[in-house]
Image (tube, rainbow, N blue to C red; front, side, top):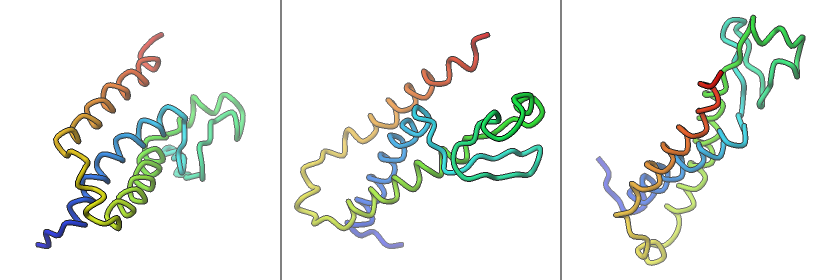
Amino acid sequence: MMSSAPLHRFAFAFGTAFAVFYVIAVAKDLALFTVFPSLGIVLAGTQHTNDLTDPAMGFLAPAMYWYGWAATAALGALTFGVVVALLPGRWTRYFWPGLVWLFPALSMIACAYLTLPWFRL
């Protein structure tokens, strides 16, 4: 197993950035693709049912955005992680890794807050 400093920086940067980018993707409704599982259709971008067909289609074929949100967050986190891994070690040693856990914790709270409207009637 390889345990190099750039790989270590990439792992911490990717994990932290994924949590942040996921909250942004959910809040701004930025999905790389939308999945309609009952129809077996995958469409690029965020597609709401009234964008494509009759508004009643939302009841018959609900859309799933989670895969698109996760892909958007992964793409952003991958880019951020590669940039941080390519930076010289002397530039990144000032970031205290003891607070890295704070970003995923705050992101979980933000995601719970963003999904509250789905549970209200």
